[in-house]
Amino acid sequence: MNSEEIIFAVERIEHLEKVFDEVKTAFETDQDFFENDAMQKKVSLLTQYMESGQWLRDFELDEKGKLPADLKRGILSEDGLYNLVCDIEQSKHKKSGSLINLFDKNGILFAILWIVIYVVGFGTMDGISENIGIPKLLTVIFGAVISAVILVFTKKNDLSERFGLCNFKGNPKDFLFFIPLAVISTASTWSGLSFGIAPLTALLSIIAMCFVGFLEEIIFRGMLFGEMRKNGIKSAIIVSSLTFGVGHIVNLLMGAPVFETLLQLVYASAVGFCYTAIFHKGKSLWPCIISHAAVNSLSVFGAEPNTAMLIAVSAIQTLLGIGYGAWILKKGEQ
Image 1 (cartoon, one colour):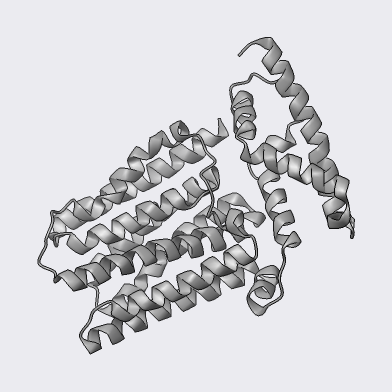
Image 2 (cartoon, one colour):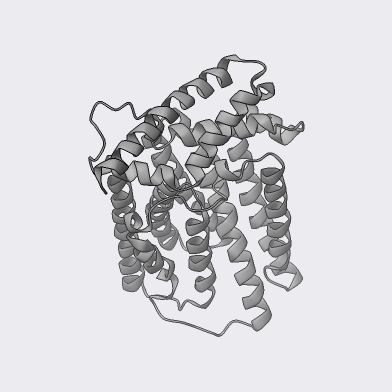
């Protein structure tokens, strides 16, 4: 990059830094913020900057040390611009209703409510489906219903960016082109494959597992972590990861072996840490949703491992999840 391009980048950042400060102040203090046409044009300018890819290019310039040390660069902070744009969009399109009112009042409580609905609902529907002789049938129906409710709520209240249901905004090379994620996604098959399951049961199980991947990501990452990070990124990452892992303890209620479940708590927390890092840095849940759905769906055909293999697979998943997540977080700080 030549010196002229650096000059243009500096001028752009200086200008947008002033715009950012003006918009942030007006949003927090001006009751007529949304009726101010001039201010809304500035909001559009910031949004376009963030979504066009220019923000990422400027951010990479800063990482490489190409920008002046004394340049004010608050707009390049990883969550500053993103959170401001999301807050403005959420306020602009705020709707009435009990769900959005609860979300506005206490986003963490809102996430916990969905965790309870998801865990209790899936466990109950699994049991009833087994009793009627068509495993996973009611689980699939329940998964489809609450997924639709969440998607409609998200779309209606313009929460797609906040919940991560948007395009990936990171640089793939900073995520090692998702190769470690692809490896983690195949963990269910490391012990071999088994195709003894009935076709209808297999189909319903795969669909149910895809719903699990989607719902757990949007609830634990998009909702819970998305709200908790306002009070501190490090604590939010830890709590979100551990909550995701510990949540698998409900498998004991469905008859899962104790030792196997305890191992799952460990590697699920590690993989949850990895997914949280991806969402935090890339601003999108789709890589996590796809990976999570793949892990769950492939488990339908995964062979039952012996104890030694179970421990080995769990250890590899744990180390890979923690290592990959740490790489992503560290790379973003350089």
